[in-house]
Length: 199
Image 1 (cartoon, rainbow, N blue to C red):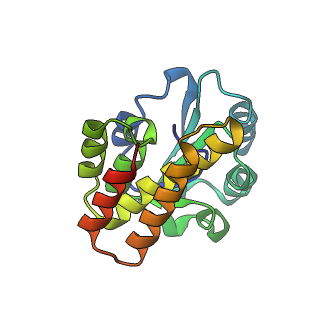
Image 2: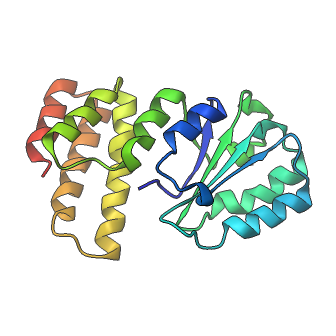
């Protein structure tokens, strides 16, 4: 499941849309930061703040660095507290044009890490073949940490919202693996530990 967060993405709109194909068309809204006016942005914020019709609602702001200062300030509240079914993507070519208060609230993604985070609804699969495919798609330690951190948050949310007997064991496994990866433990041994303990 796509996480409810705000992301700063340095890739093209078409690439991002290809990665978001699992999100229903009706729950995806794309706007152009270069042409939107503050009144229109307020209406859009009100619209995307409502509950989505599907599992997720996605707001994509193309050329976000071209939002004027008033629009960026208007967007700030939404970035601070997106509702539980909303993910926001700001597509930029020059992030330094955004207000520091905006960029400080965004999770930065490049094309490689967004591919790992958004693939197959972002959740690690239980079947060994699917898990292998997902792990193989992570070409760097950082990308793997992003994927596993996202899964950890999803498992925690699942545990709180509706008890899942697998969640406590998976949370423990993910926490250990992420800690080891961040401490530069041997990547192959750490991934093998995940494979053995993921069920």
